[in-house]
Image 1 (cartoon, helix red, strand yellow):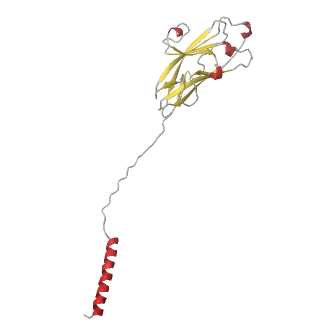
Image 2: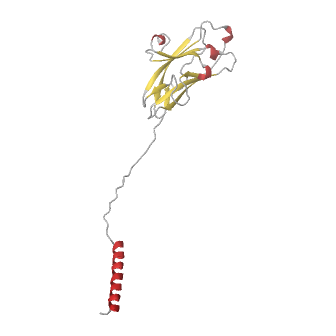
Image 3: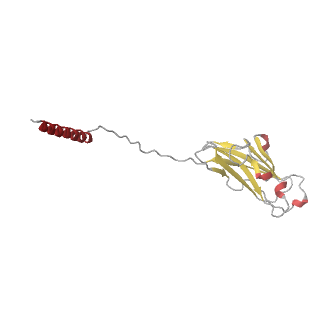
Length: 194
């Protein structure tokens, strides 16, 4: 074979080699594997506070000086997250006689028997003062975060508080025929990450 022929064979061989390598690289077989992880579910917890009774914890019609009313309220955490709660009160003074500031309210926890005769014998006093204290705060503070006096409840837990309201014996004639209505608010927030 002459030089020209050898060169031509070499060029053809080189071209076939390059084509084979290029074609082989594209058609190489690879072993592969894939794993999937399904059902990555997320849900949020709940903060749900309730009271029993849900209305009219303490009421008294035709009070006279020296009268008192005592009743328990069960505060429940119906949610799935631990919570802390505070209690505030707002009372009316529509007749301008000021009965809301004359009535004395005491709130206690841990009372064995929550009635007029026995409420004072046991438990821890959480509040004592006017029916609607300054700024309405009775127990704790509804501001976000842990505050002095806040009450804590684990998920699905409850506690019984004893509410006692009295009209002092020294109450004067100006309070005859007076009326006030109080609204107690139990404000809760999560304790986790807060």
